[in-house]
Image (cartoon, rainbow, N blue to C red; front, side, top):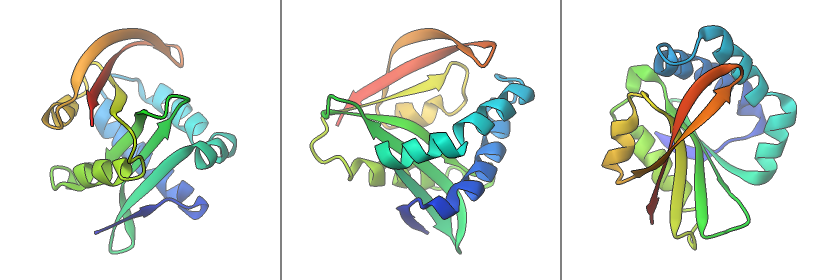
Length: 158
């Protein structure tokens, strides 16, 4: 497996992987119609153009096939990194790919002191983040493209 920076040529394949991982991850939490709408917005040319400017976007590949990805960003406070997304194909989860993506992303922020993320309450992957020593800091009620959800804000020192 190799981990590398995402290129613009990867966007369509990453969106395909996102569709697969979202369906597996959120089928009981977010209606499929809202998943599709959100993914179309999140991977639009405009949004991706901004992400390439403002985020570290990494790809995990096995035999030149994208099997996982992670997006990291930093706001004005450069001591804090935000993990925007981390997904691994459901058929090959629990093999350390997500953990490697996570650590590879942190390497881009050597001066960061803290990392945060948001995860949907009820997401089965919560245990993954707890193993990485993230702690739940608060619950945030939100409207996810017309669907009410509760996000858990998690964080930890690094």
